[in-house]
Length: 79
Image (tube, rainbow, N blue to C red; front, side, top):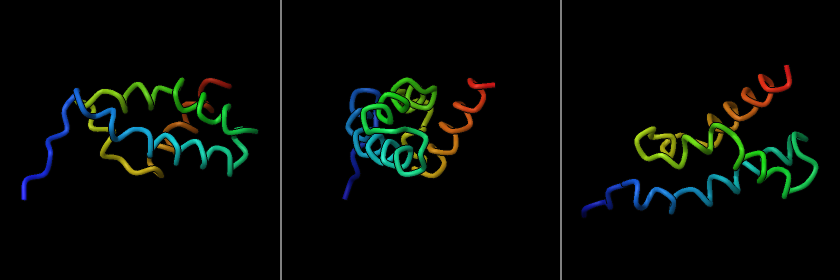
């Protein structure tokens, strides 16, 4: 059975679940106080910019790796 090929035209289909999981993790770990803030953090992060570009292959990464990169980028922007 042939698997659909991920392209720039369809990579957006993979993002809602990852964004929801990342926002939930940010909320659970106290990085954000509410879901709207958590979602905003994800969408405004460098990680999201990479996620939406198929060529980076970030869509392939798991939530743990993506979460770690988001929190690292937040720490860098605070310092």
